[in-house]
Image (cartoon, rainbow, N blue to C red; front, side, top):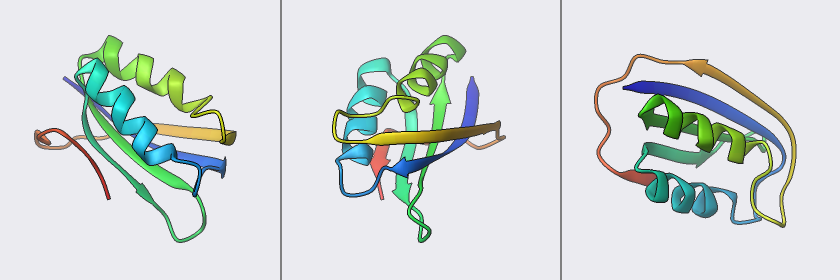
Length: 88
């Protein structure tokens, strides 16, 4: 299992980014969470099969139609199993 923490910057709050990320993650069978950060970015933690996590990382580069993604910075993280995918 692979886990990554990604921070997405741009116009990513107030555009259904977290809910759309959850929908993508659930479709892919990826667990984790998405939450707004105080500085206007969104943090996404995703755990699952490497190929599924990579597909979600690719989706984060684009996001939902109303979003404008300027940058996505991801790093591997070592986390215990996170059940499901939640929006915080």
